Length: 120
Image 1 (tube, one colour):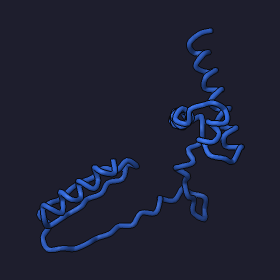
Image 2: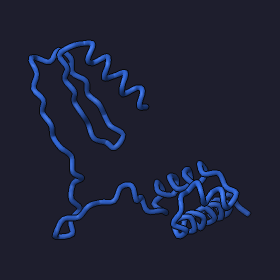
Image 3: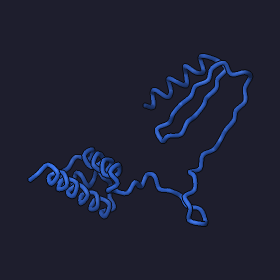
Image 4: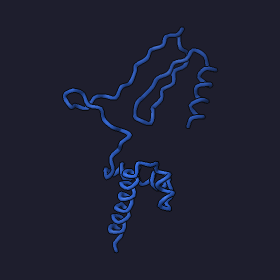
């Protein structure tokens, strides 16, 4: 069996697991336990197959407007005014969006950065 054939076989096996997992209506963890698999492997293969366009990306469902066109995801533009911001931080979020945060005091910026790092 060639490497390509072996890869296609693995892909088909994981696609079948993902189909069965979804059809079971239970959690990925429960399915993995029931079928003697590791949950992280199911998550990893699902992610890989989404990237390759072989599995639907349900986390990124596009919303459509009345004409059936893809509508932009709702995102609120918020402006908070404060006396002359001394520090500006530009963030590039994991979903491709950008955020700009202005703070007047350095300790506020340090506290914000600490909170962001704690979440990572």
